[in-house]
Length: 214
Image (tube, rainbow, N blue to C red):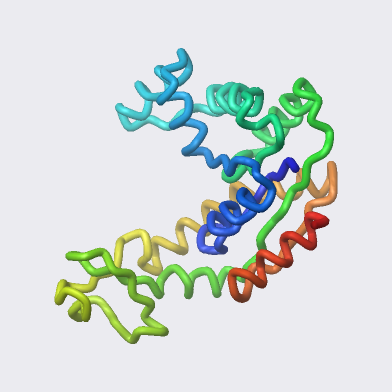
């Protein structure tokens, strides 16, 4: 099973990718995984990528495409894979088509986990953490807010900058601007399958498995 998984931050994509990885016995590969694999193996490209990242620079498209090609060509992916976070641009999608052609990968499914943006913002901005023990609180369920004390250790509860409404909105805006063209590309070249991402984790998993034909 070869899967390309789409989903905005907060839709539960990472959780579902891990479950599908266990169900199908195939690796869940995120953009970060691709870089870590290459850096850990100390491949020539991994060394270049590490140098860029150590200086705070983004890894360019052409290098990411080569790294993806190397990983998909490895034994780790011989029985399939779940690609998460790649492709992010139409140029990357077209390059991935070329990689698939070279590797004789002709069957793959493109899945989009769909959640209303308003609900995503509610999910992400509901999260608070204890600065001392790291316990996660949900504002809606736990009624804790920034400045309250953790009932577990007494530490101060706070909200990460990444989870603040203005930051979440910016993250979503970037995601939709960069990813919508990629979704349209797959809608034009092959069927992009939308899966409702609202509900309990196991409910969403069952929808995914049904969509994937299991």
